[in-house]
Image (cartoon, rainbow, N blue to C red):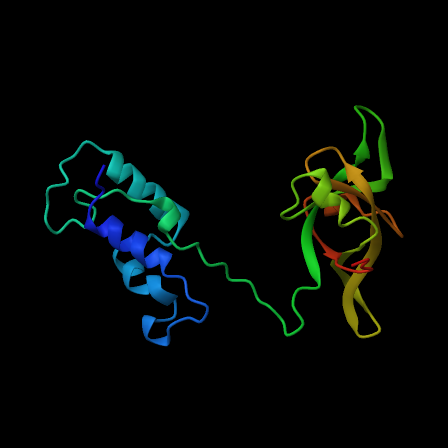
Length: 191
């Protein structure tokens, strides 16, 4: 099945992978010229483009960039994430305080359940065993010139098969912290 010249052009550009980016190709590399014509920027635009292609309307308009073409989602550049990187790289990973460890009726506030971003299985969770966890919060009263406080803990073991871990803190986390962000430090490291 022939998918059209635009598809062939996108496929040819994606196969031109060079070790060093071409400065004349723009900030986005070799796909920058095609990105303005084809590639959506956000997931909602991708969904709109796919639903547009699946619609039964006539795509015979010569000005229509999708006329007679197939949109290859794997040829689209990834959506850029605006993450701030410092000079030393990332030293922590973010996570969420889900709850205390509990059964149906009994609650154990000594152990907190943490969902670490990007960790979806037990093997990935095992990397974080023994790592320090910090719950950073603001208090009302200033102590030693700052009202920012930290409760430190460490990851003790995985919890279930979905990448959730158990952590124990020096002082139990308050229930107000359910759903709050915690920082899982990448130290102490055994790499």
